[in-house]
Amino acid sequence: MRHLFLHARLIDPGGGTDREGHLLVEDGRIVDVIRDGTPEVSGAEVTDCAGLCLAPGIVDLGVKVSEPGERHKESFRSAGEAAARGGVTTMVTRPDTEPAIDTPEVLEFVRRRANEAAPVRVLPMAALTKGRAGREMVEIGFLRDAGAAAFTDCDRVVENTKVLSRALTYARSLGALVIGHPQDPGLSAGAAATSGKFASLKGLPSVSPMAERIGLDRDLGLVEMTGAAYHADQITTARALRRLSRAREAGLDVTAGVSIHHLTLNEFDVGDYRTFFKVKPPLRSEDDRVAAVEAVASGLIDVISSMHTPQSEEEKRRPFEEAASGAVGLETLLPAALRLYHGGDMSLPTLFRALSLNPSRRLGLDTGRLEKGAPADLVLFDPGAPFVLDRWTLASKSKNTPFDGARLEGKVKGTWVRGVRVFG
Image 1: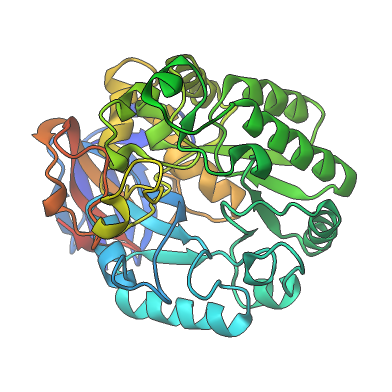
Image 2 (image 1 turned 120 degrees about the vertical axis):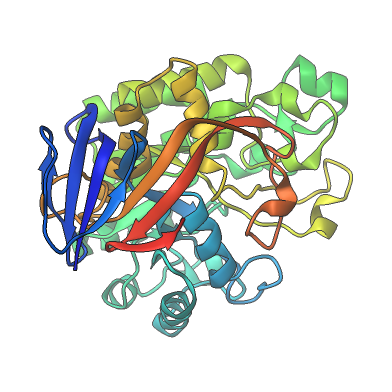
């Protein structure tokens, strides 16, 4: 089966280019990237992109799908539909489910459900310790053989350094990636905001940005000791960025991510106590937000993700300090990220380097590229199309988005996985 994409604005994060051209796909893979002229290919299905942007599909690292245990919040079917609408062609899912994904049997259940229900690729991660309790590491080898993309206890920090160091050592010997949540659990316990004058005026329990720096220092020390491959799920403060830079200069196998919410929102957005703005870690100062944006543009922060975390209305309709943390983001990731492009902070190839190419590289995938031989996981979008987001139109079962009522630019017109159109 052949498919020809004509007159597209090709966004290639690998080559760092943004130029007009055409793309030929056959049997689910890109077979030619045509820069000049108008090709004629017999027997091919043709999509005229009419000058819209065609880019590698987004690889969203850190999506929570609430199966097993909490399907009322999100299922693989609803998350898969939301992903397709948002141009996300690969969801890398978290193991913070009920029960946690900490055995090959639970992992196999998740893989089977995902294959049955989701129209996009799903790569499940596994817990690092049993029950995410931080006391005993999981069978990393068996889970890796069963298809675990990486290992993480998500926002439950492994406090016991001996347990974490052993897990990192085993992960290194097996070539497995460990994902950490840099945060000092003692300092951050019960926090709903970032400490400072604003949090004090609002009377909110808060945590110092140093809690992230302290947590990262601890993790990087253990990475240096063990030689493990490590990814920090979210780096959101300027102080932690300086420590990350030194680790890179020292040659440690370390990468880092940041959520789209920490790149486009700041601590003042919680001013009306709207719990949809309560995320983990809490929203930071404007100076920290700007520092994180600059780190993505420079390549110090590798990955932008949605950190999609569905929560029920009941869990969000509470006083701010008692409400559950988290926001959905599969459908809003791309239009929110385009704020960085429209604001002049980075080019589209740089943006898709963080959305598609870098997460693919970190996980050893061949996605995230517009080049011959790459999978035809693609998103076609109009970067300038304006709209006002209505949360009730989202495909996710949970509607807890901080962008409800926001004016956004950028609409997905089509999404393809392995050359098959799954949206548009």
